[in-house]
Image (cartoon, rainbow, N blue to C red; front, top):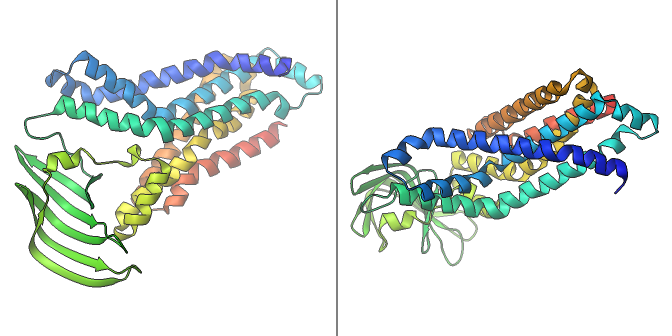
Length: 358
């Protein structure tokens, strides 16, 4: 590594780590804001509360790592520009792209780390955090129940849009049950509601559809009341549920292929999450692509400009991701556009800014 590369890299280390730490504190503070009352009311132990906070950190990687890359890049380039060091490098015949090369390498490293955390660490941490939450909230009979997630038992997959609980009574609303068949497509049963009666579920106002091995419906019947005999209580079934945050991109892709086409709203939500899992790891390098030329152009105004540029770029990134996810999940725009919108915006803007500054 050349001297100039080591020099620029060292300039990034402290502000990158500081930017990550600030965002970790902010995101955990936001998480505590919503849960602190329950933690106190339920008298959660310090160990459980601390473990829960640590386990939530990987789920914030989509903000932590891009923020670190952004502030590291902005403050480093601003400092070098303010002290005319970049001017000296350019006078020596070094191009802007070459000066920024170590910054882009840091962005690629952080993007790779983002993908590994998302695919390896985050699913495990999210599952473990739910176990800790269940432990904290546990009441006699069953853990708390979440809607809009899958839970599995034997050959059945269950999905409930809404869950109501009154004491020991559990009622699932807008229920879908997929019974996996050895050959061919699963049998799909939908019901407006389902209530557990011992080991039997009472399904009300539903439809059963059987499909052949080509996916065509060969049998369809409505029912007012139907019974499903399950030997495992609902509380234990729900311990196996998985949300999209607990799945890797490959797992989510398999769920979309197996279950998604039967429900458009669910399909839009899953496909949007799937595309975000593929696109978000690129955010670190793309944010740097935009921030570096902006910091170089306005860096002579002082260090505060580096902070300001970081805040503005981060605000754009946050809003593009949040609005894209909301619109894609609701079906207002195609999931693939929602998931890759921030990549398109920052890639186009960054390429243009680099061309202008060169």
